[in-house]
Length: 443
Ligand SMILES: Nc1nc2c(ncn2[C@@H]2O[C@H](COP(=O)(O)OP(=O)(O)OP(=O)(O)O)[C@@H](O)[C@H]2O)c(=O)[nH]1
Ligand SMILES: [Mg+2]
Image (cartoon, rainbow, N blue to C red; front, side, top):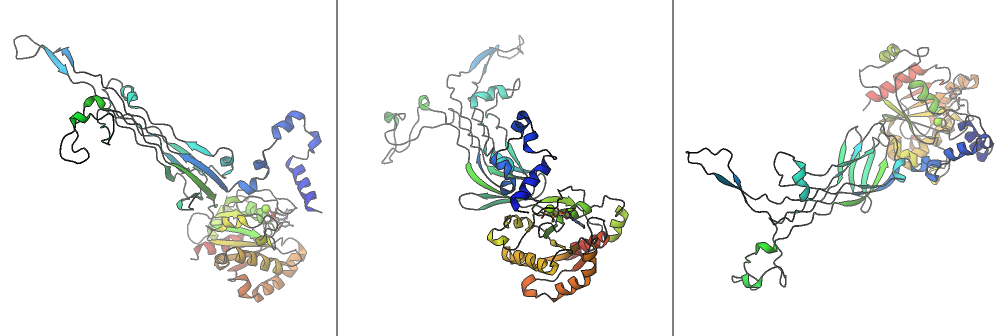
């Protein structure tokens, strides 16, 4: 079947069996997708955003305030008390700081897709000095307006933040709740009370008659309070950032399309990735925590027996299928291999009922080598899947021998275990749990 046939078939599957004509006009309108939504797998893990810190609030220009004379309500006749007291003049307030922009990790967020439609983040401008009067009601006037609220941009765990221009790394955010300050808000402006005019030549606001001293330009300048001016708040930082997501997982599942990677993820974890008998079913990585859920296949007790150390269960990442020539852009290319960067080990899945399982294994190892030679040095397990098919079961020993005979220069390090399994009927999964546990114990 041609690949276009596959995509049509896939669409029909996604629509729950309805062909395009069976949808009403309203339904079709609702289902209309943007180009980005259509090709999610190309955009889900990278984005460019513009972040702007808020401008600082302006200082207050309030020069008219005078000291007030008020009645002394504590006054008692006969004592040495003043009947009237003088309250000092309230001073004008400085502007408040503009809001900062932070990037924050949220584990409920799973892609950067949203940033393709909404990619400008501007924090609010700081409060002006005049707002300070209302910021502290009943408790006296603040001399500085309060700072503006910060904004937080939520990203998925595993997001790398770089400056677009220079490529400088600003942060690699992996843990839920981690934050990174990316654009600082501008400082608030100073109020008129503290501001001095610039003593530049020709500045009209400086009264020449008041210039004294022996400086050839101006010397000391005696200022006239009439000329005091408030200062505007400073502009906030403004940066263009590049976001790049690399999933955070302990183990990556790699293999040719249809080998059964997603089926294995389903069998070992609670994740429910799509499984279907056509290639490139998986377009984006799926994650799952290794916890057996199906009592008929494995109980949690059986799992804990297989685990020697009482460590947190590993996270598996199921990636799209890789094909020969992926490094030249064939299939889905190999850009998704970046998601293996943070893994500690790999599980290479091979369809043992296929034409040439040993050849498939060599293709995968070669593609990994072409992408990043470091990947072929990582510890890995070779899973021979589809053992429920008789043809696969009969060939197991031949496949083992074939893999062991492969040249280390081509495939890198040898697998730490070769595990025959069937994701369909669950056989061999206990052995796979044990092998994964062993992989996690290895340095
Ligand atoms: N008989 C048998 N079929 C299996 C087994 N594991 C997976 N399959 C079938 O193989 C086909 C492909 O399975 P997937 O899990 O989608 O394979 P994949 O490697 O994730 O495929 P891509 O996402 O396209 O790369 C499906 O029809 C599965 O039902 C198995 O152990 N035995
Ligand atoms: Mg898949």
